[in-house]
Image (cartoon, rainbow, N blue to C red; front, top):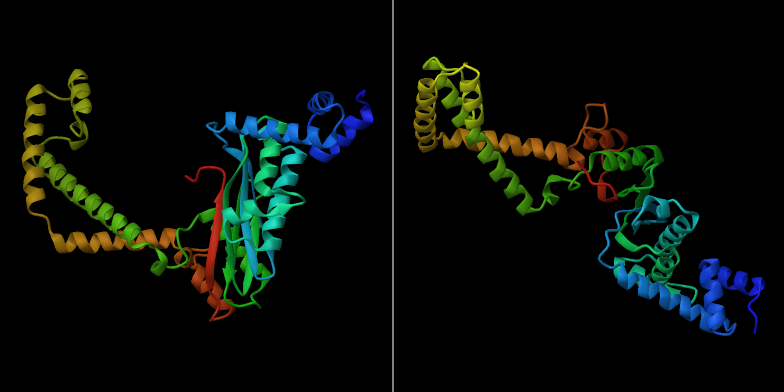
Length: 330
């Protein structure tokens, strides 16, 4: 049976596959639509398997709400060209709408949702067959709260969802917080929610930094007292360079090395532990101020997110948030 343009168009509408793929499948199956659909489906599986190790770093991140439920999802592909096609955008929107309608709690539940006679996981594989690029759900997060709000960044690569404890919180105020989450990338809602492992890591890093600074200060003071410029001898590369430039003699370099080694060892052996702990705790508090949502300053207001919300309603707080960014955060 000859394959007609009408047959090809019918298969294209049903599968979204390219003209040549549809024609080839129909010729191979003697115009059997069901069999042709299966061929196209298997082609998608084969391409997906071949491209499994490819990096899918482009795509779209989108968020939305349904009553007291909010979700954010990223659909990833290999190139920005595919990410900007109407078909890819439509699939990302379909996935989000399905997540919201079914209130999917995790990525596995999301992939298992059926759209028509196929699951979302199967639809993504089919789309891989059409585009020839690896596609995958990169991230999926969901929250529930008395009031939820979603923010989608204009570039389609960053989206956030935020939950609040009061359903009458103003849309304007809650959107401000969603923007804050997008721009400032907090690690937790409040200090209590920061994992103990993170707190400990930050404290250890703060202690180490404080000790290094105290040693450097002692060494610099000793060098200055000996008539040497600390900036000329702060590394072996600088010492060699400054000797070549005539800014430092070999004797001065040797003297500087001796002072640095002796002073550093003496200072390290006699650290003011109480002072170090106090400085380190101050640095840890600075980490909280920069990275904990309720402690962060809101935009250019110089007031914390917590203070901003309390001005609106003394009992209003953020209960949870999620953020998905396809681009690496600095």
